[in-house]
Image (cartoon, rainbow, N blue to C red; front, side, top):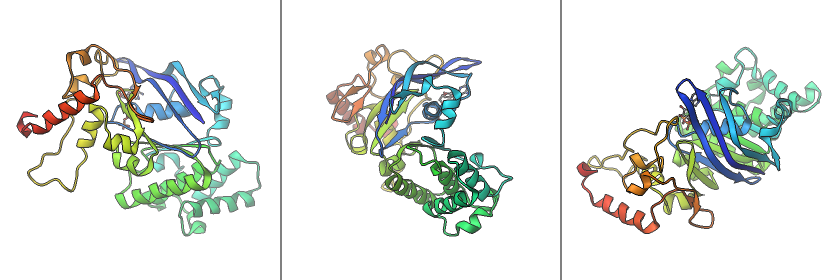
Length: 337
Ligand SMILES: Nc1ncnc2c1ncn2[C@@H]1O[C@H](COP(=O)(O)OP(=O)(O)OP(=O)(O)O)[C@@H](O)[C@H]1O
């Protein structure tokens, strides 16, 4: 349904050209869920906004690439054509629901307007659909909710309303950028469960962007790991969590706090900072922070290559060298790491 080929989204900043998304390719099928994970600044949000063509333009521009949605390149569509697609075929949910809701209008009015912007239907019919959508997103008193202003509702309720609005055009693709970051863990679990139910009901493809590996483990059919604007590993949750093929993903997984940690264990962190995307390092972008980097890693940029049926990695280390390096690392004392 969506095929992204060699997409580059560069930002013209006062410090120079930021290579926020640099040669990214992936595809998603109808009804599939893809998780995009990576540290802060790895380019997840710019990628999501690029798919919807929501980046401010300028400064963001696309020197190259294709975003084929049902075979047609979104980068070649006019603003009018894109407006028609957004909300109808493509919809997006952001981290902060308040940024998507108008504080001075009641929820009902906003939802009805959203429905009527997609379909030419009478107010009464749109109202009935709005109530049904609110029921679909798990709001038990939809009538009352319609009469509320956004500030009168909890964060979880507001995010449900934003999801209802996103669904109002029955989109084929829903992009959720950190949809639960602002919510507590209980509400987070409810919203994630809701996304899964919606997918089953509407057969929507979902791209979920997060820095939380736990979320993608639960939700995603496939996971893309991003680092400094590039995809560095791609695979099923099984591949990424149990057959990790490259050091960046391995480091991310080791940085997840676990209940098994005792007071004597150290929580791992990835040393250093993500690279400056105006002048990324030579060779592999992760090499300055990689505990297993070789001199070759500092010179040669790795390509994303297949290591299994659905599994790809961008790393010059062979599987054997990676295993041996991990083993040596595990043997070291914490103070040596
Ligand atoms: N408007 C902008 N001007 C200049 N640089 C920008 C702009 N927007 C994003 N960037 C840069 O682009 C890179 C990717 O940013 P992006 O917001 O996509 O990262 P992210 O992975 O979504 O991070 P986070 O998880 O913190 O949202 C970063 O280096 C960021 O500083």
